[in-house]
Image 1 (cartoon, rainbow, N blue to C red):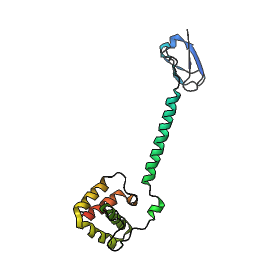
Image 2: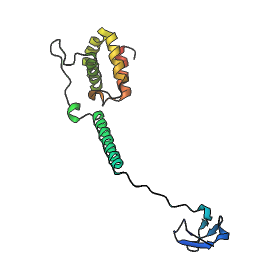
Image 3: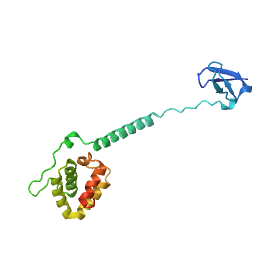
Image 4: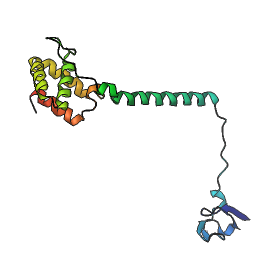
Amino acid sequence: MTIEFHCSHCGKLVRTTEENAGKFGKCPTCHQSVYIPTPSDELEPLRLTPVDEGAERNRHRLEQEARELAQKLRDETDVPPEVAKTPLPEPVGDVRLAPDMEGMITEYAVYMSLGKLNEAQELADEIRQDLPRADEAIQRLVGDELLPPRLAKIPRPVLLKFLRQLRGSG
């Protein structure tokens, strides 16, 4: 009985006798060493099942939704140029544009990153008047995976150092 197989190097059809099965031999075309399969090494043809068109459409839809969601998340982490160029809120009398503690801490970090140390110090003094609320807000900011857009360009280690300084422990 004859064994037929394709050379794994050059792809040419090789024929040999069954007594060489399970051994290595040389391809007559490219002279590379090839394994001569035994009849049991030969694979059965794969049995293919029909494609479920509905499942394929659903899979494509889910993949598209995943890509769109991933893009939205990437867009949220990028700071749009108009946000990056937005001027910092200026105090108006005793009323700030961002009166909440997280807003004041965000302003403080932005002032620090811009080197506006006098403004940052004034804000720090105000924040430290309510240290328990400030600590709570700092913990929320540090725990969030996504930072507010105005803080996104500040490297995380630098931001953490600013926040430690604000708490008076850094």
